[in-house]
Image 1: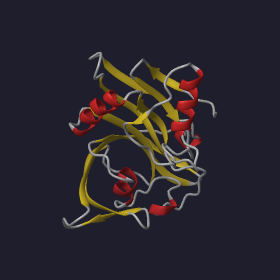
Image 2: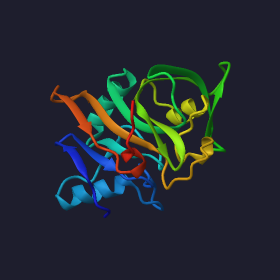
Image 3: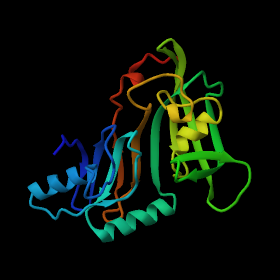
Image 4: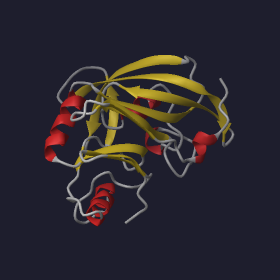
Length: 223
């Protein structure tokens, strides 16, 4: 079992840090974060069943939440569908983002064969609306290139949404060669920083936070 960093746990839910490069959920032939959580629960004598509530790409790290029972997973899915499950990300994008705050809305189409998402101009089968809000945390120079750190509140959860919405505005994420970054990096500069929601069983407000561990986020950003 890989080192598992647990941020929140009760009898219903478990929140952990997903490292970069690890699958959220795999199959019998691929190791994933789910496997590590199951092994951890099994070692404690608990049922080794976990249910994915939301997913992060393999190239993204940060906070993830899992349910321990099917019933709680269903309740959490309802929260997600109703917009009551809030996800905040940190990203470092190429270039200087002129507007310090903003909202982005696009129509996105995900090509499953190429595993790539595109901004499109009209609605058709497979096209979904994507929305987010962002706040700039300042600019810096990273590997001789100006970059901007942004805090992103996702209003929808589309495949590669943050990556393609910023890239389509000439601000690809640092290290994201698929969407046009010219800055080589070991990881894509995207991190799931916070999730917050009302617990479906206890009704308590839960906020789970993890700070990014990639060096690109440690640069001295200045507003």
